Image 1 (cartoon, one colour):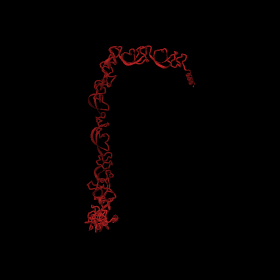
Image 2 (cartoon, rainbow, N blue to C red):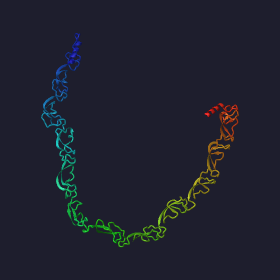
Image 3 (cartoon, helix red, strand yellow):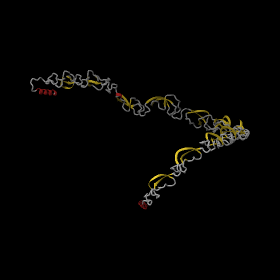
Image 4 (cartoon, one colour):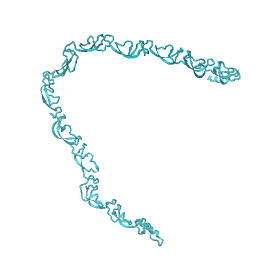
Length: 595
């Protein structure tokens, strides 16, 4: 409305002062500004009384007011009272309803006034079963839960009600199952029937029916399966009736018929025992028959095989054994007791031969016999055993060849046989003068050095003529030359001093031929002149006073210095033979030495 008056004021101002001007229509909607309720908006121009209809369901909200509208009725309505201004499906209020927002048929508290549309969706006209959660169609009724104090999954006590909507579990510490018969013990939660009772836990039960608080299975001591009857279910050591015998001699073995007693395995009444069969009822030292496999018939303290029974105590009496023992080969003769498996020893060397014979004798081997049958020469007392050898020395030179075998021997192998190398390997075991292989070369010129292809000779370790242990002769036909020597120096002028030469080799004897040397002798500066052989620095001596002056010059000399030259170069005046030293310099040196 304020906008309309603003445009109307503007139109009056624009129209002032001009005659014959038509009515103003700023938005050009065909309605003059003074009649247009909003001359800036061509879609609206008329004022009406009504309500804003935000959800456009034909019913408005709020109080009635004046609205600027056009031809369309959208956005406003002359009818008010919309109870859900933002929901086009609901607009009217209906009293006396009951809530059912999840549509599960169960209702909440009521009656209430409901905001609905064409239908009563979300409400019902009549009350139904109460709904504990009207937002979950899957749940309506309250459930029960029981406290599970021992957390074994089964509760007890008074139930609590809770609404299990949206999959909510029961309250913490509560479960859906009740009936826990032991609320404080996680092992037990239900009553199970039993028909057998084992009160003393000995594995034997008595018939008894009832129920007992249990877990997945009956607790120990209860069962439903048949079992051996317990003669005393209060004492775990007494289970079934056992036999007992009278034992007048107190040896632990009874006599006569047994009686039945409900006692433990180790219990007996005075004068009774757990075992019967006493073979000597009046003798407390004997009560049972024991088997024996050996006995001593002749009393010599040695046993022979014999099977039987004898009335005994804990052990067999002396002279009996449960083990087969054959120490006595003649149990009727105290002088004969040991069986010998021996072989005839004809040569008396302590080793026999031939087939074994069994002889019953005393403690030692019978005379003329041996326990060994390995005599390889039964008629020769010096030979009785086979010894192995791995080396042979047929020619007796103490050099051997590898050869394995055996021969009949005595204490040791005879000469010529061994189990290890002696002095070495024999290259000819038929010749005492030939026993060692040597490598040799033929020495045709007799200079002690051979040449050509080497050969192996079987000798007494010496190389015979015309052979040599060396094969490096550089001239096999010349006895004066046999080795190659290198020369790096020469004395061509024969003055006893050498000069370097390119290295070259010579086939020679003990030494290099003249004028060659392997090592330098001096340093010959002119090997073509015997008078010159050394390099020396010389100074020019122009005044012939024996002392020259610089510059010096390297010169090839012999034993003497050249005329006009000197080995010294400190002449202060080489033009005056009377002056040789510098007095000022000498005085300076003297002063230094005095310091």
